[in-house]
Length: 147
Ligand code: AMP
Image (cartoon, rainbow, N blue to C red; front, side):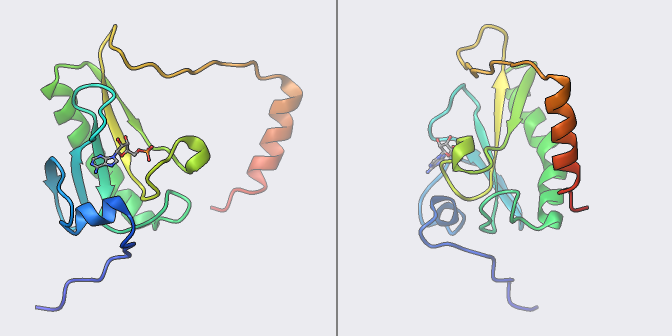
């Protein structure tokens, strides 16, 4: 048996400290790659976090393979969470960067179960996409797409 791999880690990061067992959490599940626990400030009952054990800031720096693991895992946990609180739907949400409401700079997904008439409010105010803006954005985005 070899040594366990040394994961990217930030000792000042609250989620790294949870992963290391230095601070408690209400754990739902863990495996070699990720840990799931209840959000300490739930926006609705059942609000759950899915957190990779490795410290990466967000999807801009996480390896694709790890993102793949997380993506494959998410449906099972989302189904369990929504069923447990008898919700018909959920958000699977990732705040990617401080300006996008990411407060803990360690990649994580929120699973937020939703019911009609619940108290969670997302102020999503649609604008209007005009043709010139759309054409300009298509050029600017596609020329930067590194795939
Ligand atoms: P975000 O704004 O997307 O970075 O979300 C961070 C989430 O982590 C918030 O919903 C917090 O309530 C949650 N959180 C912060 N500290 C803890 C903790 N010690 N245990 C559980 N959840 C936490």
